[in-house]
Length: 222
Image (cartoon, rainbow, N blue to C red; front, side, top):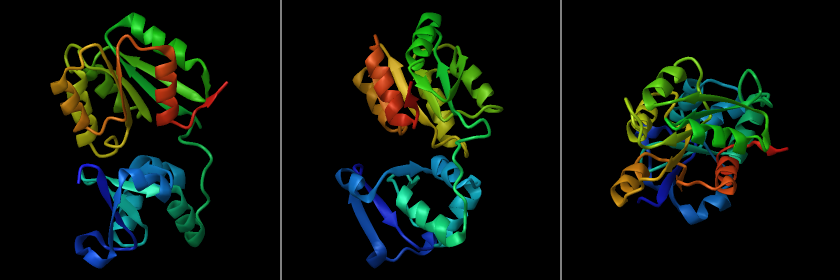
């Protein structure tokens, strides 16, 4: 089941009936349509996360469910729901209308490299932290859409920070790019269990980080 998720449509989650449950492999996801995580889907509809999940639990909105229990939504399903409910889909991701990117790395030079690499995009805000603890405190007042994260850092390392993200309501669906020069098989196995979106080995090429950010956001090139 690691490479599959459950597609649940118009059902109350506590009482799923097997005849209404479809198992879809990763290879078939593209046929279903673009999949959004819970936070992204809530932003897409311009509603709160709690409203979105309540609609799913009430059987009003269809969703996919990953093996880890996280919801996934198709744009097509959200559009149909919005039209039926008379919702006006907003054009911006947050109050500023810009995607938020948080870079967490104790290497000043690497943070500067990331900022230079991101200069090819438009429409984003960026903030920096030197370790996971500083990043966690920052998220309390400024929630990012994407985190670019090192593994080896003082106070709170990258693995610990990812666990913090995934265990806290409101941040468990934040997209994450891991960058590290210490990607042992054990580290990769632990990272894979934390629903990380992209893993890049240092030294990171400019083209690789640009491609990773394109994958994780809707940012446009200049």
